[in-house]
Amino acid sequence: MQHSRDTMSITNQHADAPQDLNNVSSLRLIFVRHGQDDESRRGGWSRFGLTTLGIKQARDIGLRIRQFISYPFALISSDLNRARETCDYIEDALETVATYDDQWREINNGDLAGMLNAEANVKYPGLYFSTLRYNESYSGGESPELYFRRIESTLLNTIEYLVERNLKTGIVVTHGGCISIVYHILMKIEWSNASRAYLCLPGQSVIFECKENIWTLKTIPEDSCR
Image 1 (tube, rainbow, N blue to C red):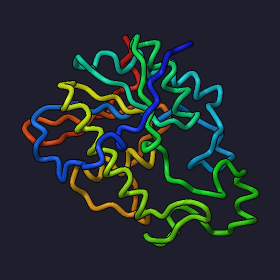
Image 2 (cartoon, one colour):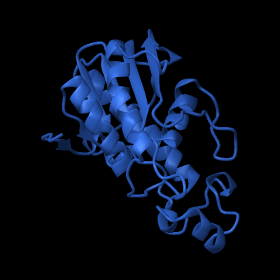
Image 3 (cartoon, rainbow, N blue to C red):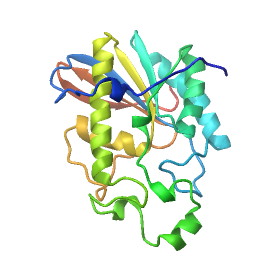
Image 4 (cartoon, rainbow, N blue to C red):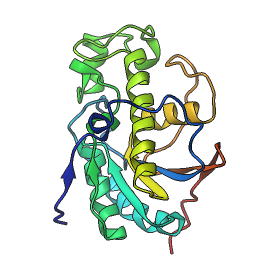
């Protein structure tokens, strides 16, 4: 799988993000969580890639989402390895080339990134995403507050990027935490790192559809490959 990729930050191209989502008349956003990675390690900005099961999930994703795409479309991905590897298979299935945006990364968990869980439990006992104060940062990383603001800005800039180009579908390969924040923003539900998150499992995909400024949610069935 060799692709000539366009690597950039959409957010950096759109410093002035739209202030709200009220000017979107019609758009489809397909959010894909990357395939399974090593669950014995902390995620966040981990550089580790997919497991064998994660590779299988990634191969299935592109086939699964093809029938839900309205053309023309754009494929955008986090640049972390587990998302890149997932996106490789989607590129092949959709015969397209992705744009990589580092703003779609998972939360920056700093020193914990990629650390074995057993080691993290000794060095940072009781420290989890849900136990951080809203404005408390990981050592060497970011806080839930900064994370939320980053994803909110990136979502708005991604929508602007798609609308400016008259694209009907945006496919975003990203991470579970990012998809949870997007869900809360588009469904107009208050978000907190301490509250129960919207759960999108590895290899799953969800569709956010906007019609006349109203967003709705649909989960893509895992048996929908054609």
